[in-house]
Length: 508
Image (cartoon, rainbow, N blue to C red; front, top):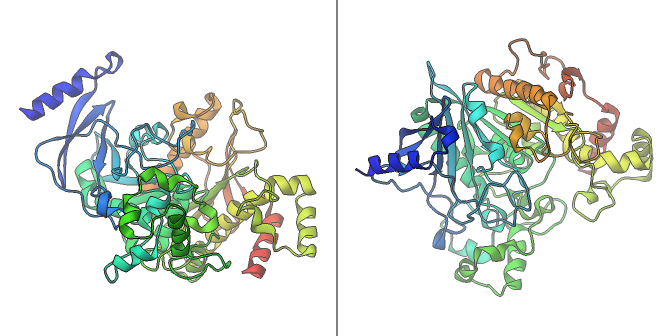
């Protein structure tokens, strides 16, 4: 009787223009879920992959979701995790907002002859904002290409990446700590492993892909002992690479304070000195002041899930031996200067006069240096460096550069800004913050095809598309996505990147 009522309810809210929407049933480990099927794709939204991390479970590792009896409505998105106002960010889904936010969304092709690849998206947002529920990340169009798409939420900000001596004192021996958002992602991957087959997915062929902070989490998953074996390919979109994690109770390599010291400073400002007092604070209190992503508040080296920095692990050959796509956009941080007061602006502070002279010459003067050096320091050189290391370690590697700039983009047209590739990867140009044209759709078709082909075979090549050089076989060659289509070429601006590589080698 309940199932009949649920089906009637789902049909009753279907808009007239989408009258072909039908209920779709799947049984996952926790119980029966009822989603929707339309145009050859079944979708299931707001599925809990872990128990709500609320009350005494705040700052605890995720626990399995509780089973339910009877069918569960999976037609609506779950709450986004606690974060600042979206202010128009198209990488953030709709309200409500809650600490009870650990859900996944699944899109699966209805027609399939055999189990299909699974693609798990890890959203960006500086570990401070974002959600897997944004329309930008709707998996329908990728699923039509023959993959199961999973998007997820994970705890953000100080609710996801935080420690304090009072929390440490109450932990059980060997209990993982601080990196709770990372733990959530691993828990979601375990849920995918256990439930992919129910949606027609192959649990033995899982691709993780993420952008910005989601890319940084992807590289950390590649070096995490806890994530080993939970995925089989990886895609890193603008995911840093030379960033440093903050230890729980010791200083950072750059001399900055430990995570517990940062937690103490925050708690003292709010008059909270005990674990109970911290857990009694309203969730929104942890948003002010905003924690700093690159400055060490959120990227954590916890000793269990992340035991070392990404670059060191790749250099030692300790990363997951899986095929990798890694790349960046052509004008990531065009709007940020190295003279700005931020952790990014401090990256060039250790340059000698001779180095600075060489850099200014390579960038064609101060204006070119100001416009491009931070993009190169933070994204472009680290991506090339990780690609070189991964290929050297004997693993299939594909480097890209995204330089598609819509004619309608309101920002300066000197390249593709940070995060602008996402709507092309998902083939969701309707979620673009600016109008798009036929040219944009052609490039979205290409990117989505490369990404889904890679998920299927561990190699993005196939069909009549431009061949993408494999980085081990063709060192320092990449695929550049342009307004005219993909082009295989040598890594652009190699002289600049060589200077940065030498600079990092000296200062570290």
